[in-house]
Length: 288
Ligand code: CU
Ligand code: CU
Image: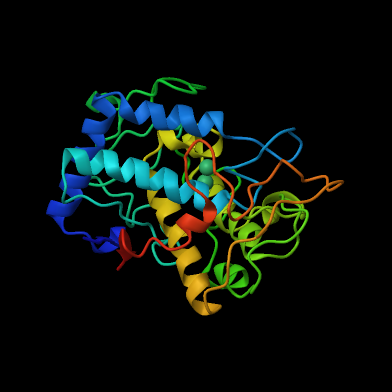
């Protein structure tokens, strides 16, 4: 049976309560921190040797798709009615709109130390202690919109610039690719200052605090953000007549990217799954 992922702004009070409850239970069981560890372990960048899977690489989309499915499985083992909601940051654009409400993700961090003080993930509630990748403290931090140096969320037209690109990804298959849907959506660019953060990356910047680094999974906002990013892959496929993941075959001899990116039919670590197998998940879930 396929299930439906809903817009966080449309969840009923009961749906919000059950989602939060399941998330807190996954955390209590110790499973949540395994997701934080895994994201840290697979956080690599252009300059590093070896295979890049989760970021700055074509497999940014399938890697996070599978990562989200694993978390969603954990949630559904707690409560089979729960699915991951998505945060449409082209529509819900203020620091008080969905998903930053008291009964979903809670709000902004306080001024002094960016500590989130409201909602179910506030440290004071006793259910959400940061255990992995701790920088400032054991509490969740946010700096929505970056008060000291304001940054705006990407707009619908920013997102459109990614969706309109008919090619999934291009050489050199990293953060410097100037064309291709994947890097336009992931949001690396060579511009200067905050203008150089686009779409996916820019949203991490806008939330700030825990969402800034490789331990961004510590903020449950990570999942809602990435569910919306995942939805864009589906929209892009539909718009471009089922356009496929690239590279279709591994970069060859002499190519600097040989052994550093995952081709369409290669295994995507740490799973026994290929990008090809993750391109169509319509039998597992759909978006409403
Ligand atoms: Cu990531
Ligand atoms: Cu991300």
